Image 1: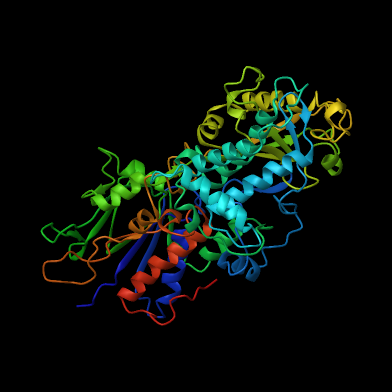
Image 2: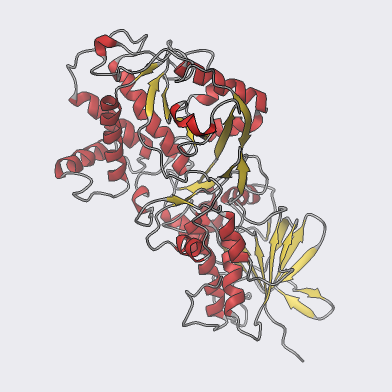
Length: 559
C-alpha cells in the first residue's frame, strides 16, 4: 500500500499564506513530500495588499510602506525583482512630504515655530513610549520627565492615549503664566497647542489602527519593532511582491472563490475520522460556502484577526469543536481596527505639474468636538483627519487617512457626500486663510493670502476613491494592535498551533492540525507585512521540522 502524502491546506492568499506556500513548496524537494493547496475566499490574491491606479498614478489601497529597509526581507525581494523603480509615477515616490502647512480651523495659518515645538514634544513622548531612549533622541532630563509622566497615571493598565494627554497637561503646567493670544476667533494658546497635538494623535491612530489611543496599551508599545533605515514605497506596487512569491507555485495550487465557512478538527481521538474516496482518513475537514468540502492533515489559518473575532463569537461555529479558551481569550483581548485611505483627484483643468504650488501638504488643526467655535458645516467624520496632501510633490491626486469610526463612516457615504464634505472642510481652511500681523512672530508666517487656492483658481475635485476594509467580509478591518488589557503574550497565544501536543501518542490527536499565521500572530512585527511574512515562514518551518524536511536550511526562500 502506497503511503499517502500529508495534505496541507492554507486558508488565505495574502502575504502570510503565500509565503508559507512558497516555503513549503520549494523546500519539499523533487519527491514533492506534500499535497499543497491555497484556498482564497476572494477573487484575487494579495489579501490586505491591493495595488491599484488612480488619476494616472499607481496607488496602494492597503499596505503601503516597507517600514525600514535595512534587513527587511520585503525590501530584499523588491530589489531582486527590480520592483523599486518604475516609469509610472507612484504613491509617495519622493518619500514623506516635508514642510507641512498647518492651518487652524477658521483659516489661521500657524507659524512653523509653534507647530514645531508641539511636534517635537509629541515625538519625544512617543519615542519614550516606544522605548527609543538613546541619547540621540532624548536627553537624560527628558527621559526622567517622561518617566514622571508615565508614573503619574500608572495603574497597571496605562494607555498610550492617557500617557500622551498626561504629557500635554504636564507641559501646560510647566508653561503657566504665558501671555494669552488674542484675535483668533475663539482660539486660545492652549487650544491651539492642543489642536496641533491632536494632529499627531490622529496620525498615530492611522499608524496603529487604534481608533481611540485610550485603548492602545502603553506597556506593549516598546515591544513593537521596525527595521532600521528609511521607509519606502514600492515603485511597481506591493502586488509585485505578492505576484513574485506566488509565481513559483504550480498552476492550480491557488483556488480563488473558496470561502471557508467551517473548520472541523479533532480535539481528541474519540472522534471519528472522515473518509475520503473510500479509504483515506485525515483529521481536518474544511467546509466552503459553495457546499464543497476538503480534507487535510494540516490547515494553516491566515485570516485576519477581525475574521477570527467574528468566527469565534457566540453561535458562529467557524471552528468545530470550538477553539480552546486560551486562544479565544487572546483573540478577544487583542485590538483590531479600521484604517481607510481616501484618494481625491483634482480637476483636470489644473496644471498637473504645478499642483505642488497650488495644494500644500496641509495639516488641519480642528477645534475640539465640544467647542462652541467649531464650524458646523464641517462633517464630524472629517474632524479627526490629520492631513490632506498630494501623494507626491507634483501629483494631482490627494490622499487623506481615516481611522476608527470615521473610517467606517467613510465606507457608508456615497461619492458625492464625500466630495461635498471634503470640499466644505478644505474651503473653511484655505479659502479664508489669513495672517495676523500683530502676532505674526508667534503664529503666522506672513505670506498667506486670502485665496481660494494659492494661484487664485478654485479647487475642484473630479473623482474619489476610498478603501473599504471595515465592511469587507473577508477582512472586517485593517490590522491589529495590542489593546489595554492584552499583551504580547496574546500574540504568542495566537501563534500557538492546535493540538498543542507534538507527537503521536497512543491516545493523542494528530498534532499540528490547525496552525495560525498572519500579522496578528507576530509579537514584534504585528500590523505589518513584515509580521505576515515572518509568520508564514514560521508556520511553514514548523511543518518542515515536523516532517524533518530541510531542517538545516529553514530560512531559505525562493522567488
